Length: 176
Image: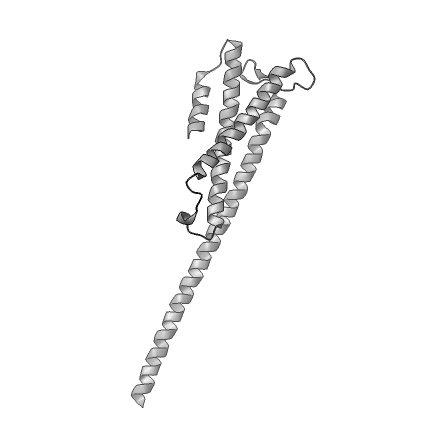
């Protein structure tokens, strides 16, 4: 939620005429949106892990620091990635390997191809991971529902057979 609120708040600021403020806005937007998508992936993977696990949810010993670990991953990876992109944009100057530039007229990543590489590809990878995890979770939930339904049917069938056997046994004793 914090990453999404931050992304929306930075979007509401709008374009800026001062170049360094425009660069800060672009880097913050890049970071915030990557953090939003990474938080989705981290939460989905944690949910998939708990669905896959056979132990009850309250039996996990690491639950005390789980939020801290998830937060370090979900905030840290975008921070490292955006910092690396910013350093490449600042240290490169006019070098041929300096392929990324923040700012411009839109206060975002200047070149659309570079925007695709620095933002679109990571978001696409995270969305593919999320879709895969959703498919996995739907499969596990439906398989679990079928397993429980089969167990319930077999339990009902066993009870009915036991009642029939006892009734037949009683009628056999009465006939003797």
